Length: 240
Image (tube, rainbow, N blue to C red; front, side, top):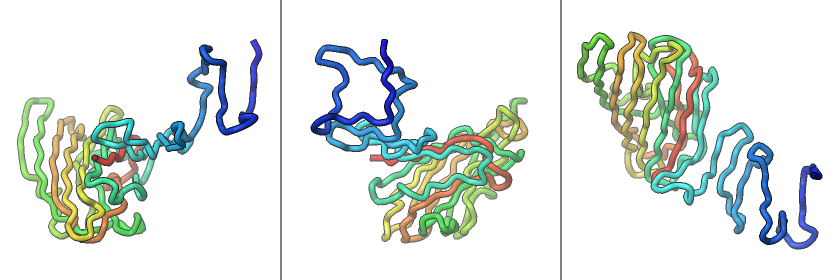
């Protein structure tokens, strides 16, 4: 069997490259087909990769009501930011944070938004928070979390607190941001996060509120209140 190695294959005429004759099967090993952009026959981009596994421009035909936009992966990162893709395309944006693992023990996972493309983070937020928890011993409770709410503050908004940094501990959750590009209304949001507390407690927290500004929100930043985000991934989706 012959082996053809080439960096580029072009048709002799026209713009179509045909592999194999009609009725023949052409087999390409999964590890051998490498491309950063996949397009359909009409030249429309279906998805794009940055070459390191981070996808963007995923065409809506791949999904139902949610459309994947991009993701950020932590690796001893001070923070994770989305500075593009938040615009008037969708009325709701959802951020799925998966297994966010801190470098420090018992820290807060938090976020803030920006109206200047991420140059600064510190828009005014008013919010409320409550949580349910249960210890491995069986003790449990439900309470308002005064330390995680904001009242006309430009501080970072707490998503969940006391995240443990044992090898098997982390936090995960979702933040839903509504109509971020509106220039007439405040930006309401909801979040629901769970963490394995540093004291081996299951910690379930709900927060909600609004960004009290009529300026369009076009960037968001996630971080631990102290230390780095050692591992984890945040996915951004637009909701149709």
